[in-house]
Length: 113
Image: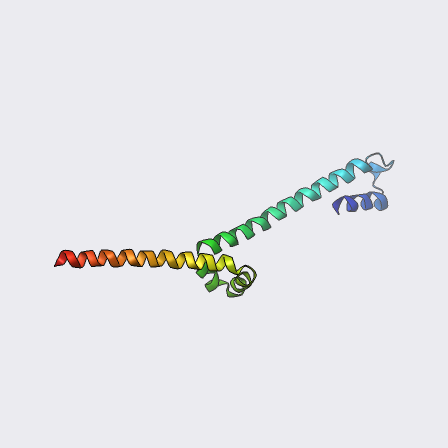
């Protein structure tokens, strides 16, 4: 798109530095490369935002459900296994901690006797 824009500018504006058309190819290639670099920069920002969203979903799905319920619901509808697996793991982890906590409490009770 930027290469086409460069070409159209050189064709219709007819700048003095390119009056003979000697630099048309070079300037169109430079315009294309510059546009490509700008698009790479923008896509890196978008890619980082998407990765951050999924890392936050993996770390704490409840936080995403609490702060952005519409987004969480769309993700849950699109990829139910991702949210379910994480929820089950979290539940099992919490259940395991609860069992461990109960055992420690039981041990303290036995030590007091």
